[in-house]
Image (cartoon, rainbow, N blue to C red; front, side, top):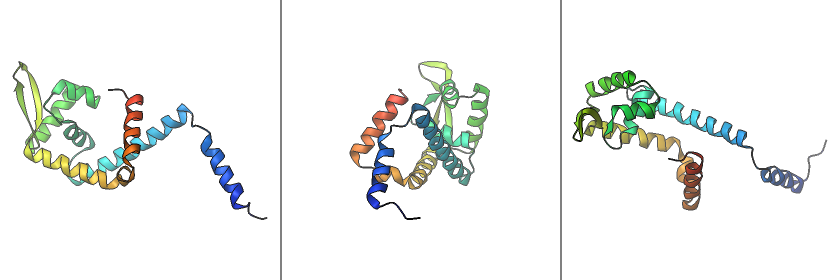
Length: 153
């Protein structure tokens, strides 16, 4: 059996690329990407003695945040957030303080040690996601725009 000529292969690849993926195929690809990201994230967090949820909580704290908001973002019960905060606070990675606008609300914020841990986790994740670094500026803007359309803030 003979191989098809290179032009035929190119035409077949071009034709396959011309067919737009279905929304279901895109959803599957997003799910695979998310699963791969969180596998990496869990590995990087574990190297620092953190669970996936502890690492996720630290990475969410870009600004002081009420515990209730953390529970919503992590999609877990408020009592779980209290336990996670307790463990991270005992390690010196975050602290709680009262919200100046409402003393009944507890805000959670990173300590300097927590900020260092988050920076290390992000740096290691970026090294695993070298494909993001290789995107040109226009492609990064397009990806950001598309993700914003799929997942509006």
